[in-house]
Image (tube, rainbow, N blue to C red; front, side, top):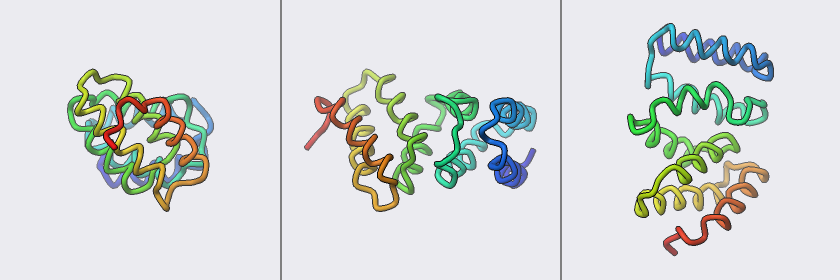
Length: 143
């Protein structure tokens, strides 16, 4: 599977994303295509474009992306949140915040959450979730 094939497949998938079996099948196709971390960016953009879809908690696509922990997905996620924060990408950010014990890194992640809370492109629900997370991580903020 090529990068452009993945983008096309994700577009097709949007019509069936609520079906968990379809999500697992898509992840299998991505893995079989051996795109590796190159699949992360199209998946994050899919989350940005399809915030209204229920993709699980966290769901097969998130589990796929998180396989690249400490291999570069974190930076891609932060850029995605700066472009257009969504509930799904905030969920992933929360998992990063919870997963690090490095104060400077945690502060950086919380700063991204702060920007998400004030983003003009975020939905009301996304902003509300960002503020909820900020209250939870008040001790890690740098203001």
